[in-house]
Image (cartoon, rainbow, N blue to C red; front, top):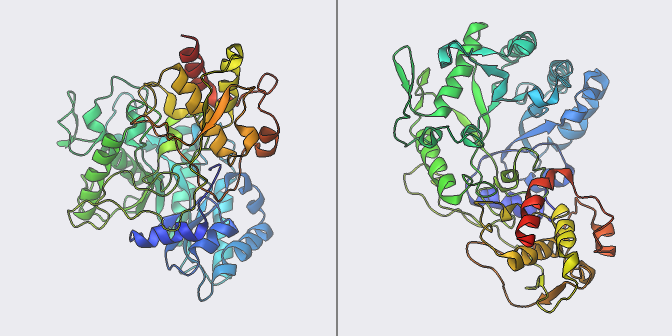
Length: 465
């Protein structure tokens, strides 16, 4: 979900250079698949949520498998191992939209895989959010875990089918989200190396020292209650963002991954599944500057690599106890080293707030938030950052650095550590209104995107202070 993307082959090589043997993507886009072709990397592809109802028709499910699985089953093709049915389709925020179509889609896709001769090697599963299970408020411990009351029947049907087909249960667990927006949450409990929380979770003699273990074992207990306590579990997403919130920082992300990878290498498991080999997909590979920020501004900063494939911090990806900087992307082409900034001689300053708002509604200004990497900029810096990020997203077309005469171009890097004024990559696949935005930089009559409201409010406040 980016305004400008690295070529798929560059991404495929980045995965190989860092020893990643498995990858999860969120659709089956042909360009992405061609980037993975010939790499041998085991791939989880996906049926998007908006297609779940369609593949409830078995003929449509057969067509989907033919187009997105069978097509790549050849020498030099894509090594598909899983098909994800939707992405967190039972999320409470969806208000039941996909509750009745997900399991029929799961069954149809697996049946189509079987009939096409792929069923023994490729399994369909449903990546769920950890909100599908919980413990009652009266007994908030992992051993009391159960599936959410409103979907208990659906989950039991799904789990029974997964067990029958030989597929794992896939769940996304985010300790960061336990901390986000809850200042009372003990911060060390989100990591694997912290001091014991002031009010530890003790369950049947087990002292839970981190929220990941407690969350995972709550799921194990929920599975056990419906008779499938030994069903394999895959962590479909886990990670820590590096910007967009006061707790989304590089040091915290490095601390989280260090503890996680150390545990995985040691096959430490969890109290209810000790010494278990838990397969984990790290979320995510790259920062995504066009992703919705409705859940929070951190959503665009989950990557262990920056938007242009540069590693953010050392990682022990090989489990040898020696963290090292991952290999960067190779062959990345950049736009010219040119930046768009606020013109110090501009006179139309009454239009500044509107122009900054326009830029931030069509580009990524999340780094300007409180406690974020660019949160300490002054009003001039905020305006320059907004103008530049918009200019770069538009591919440096000249009309994207005007803003009613308020902006100017410079060949001088105006970055102010830790705030980076980026130059974008040359390859582009625009996901925002590039053409319309390039034609005019007049903001007054153009609506801002709703999901940018929070950062816009902050930027405008800083400009008028």
